[in-house]
Image (cartoon, rainbow, N blue to C red; front, side, top):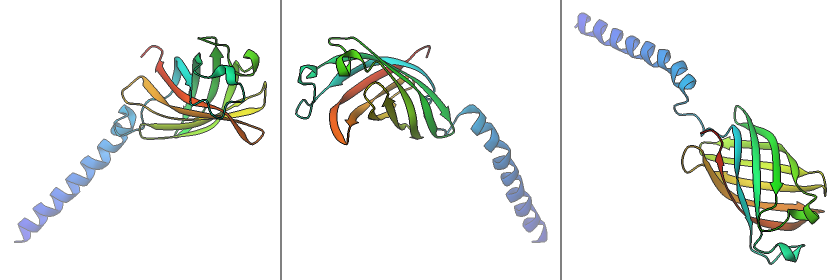
Length: 160
């Protein structure tokens, strides 16, 4: 009986050592970590619905966009650009750059805010990664406390 108890104790200790030994490896390889959102993302945004638009001419607009996303743990920062697609970017094409000022990641979901200095607007992006190197979601832009534009976005990570 004493020998069986010692064997069980050794088995428990061995299991604990194995688990403790593999935890750092799991963190290093990325298993169980949030989706890989860091890097340069390119794609498009599409403006809809058009009910609350301040710039009525942008109804249905498609713009080329990029996000340069920097990830620090679960926190997000970086840069944003907009380029002409089917129409010019917001604010008479003045809103072509912005800064990702805050954001966070939870699993395959990402949320971040972009400040656009040209018109002091704030755009909130809520997205998810359905597969590695892909991200899509919705955005809403606010200026002076009011909604000025909303729609969807879809981007892919460059180089991966």
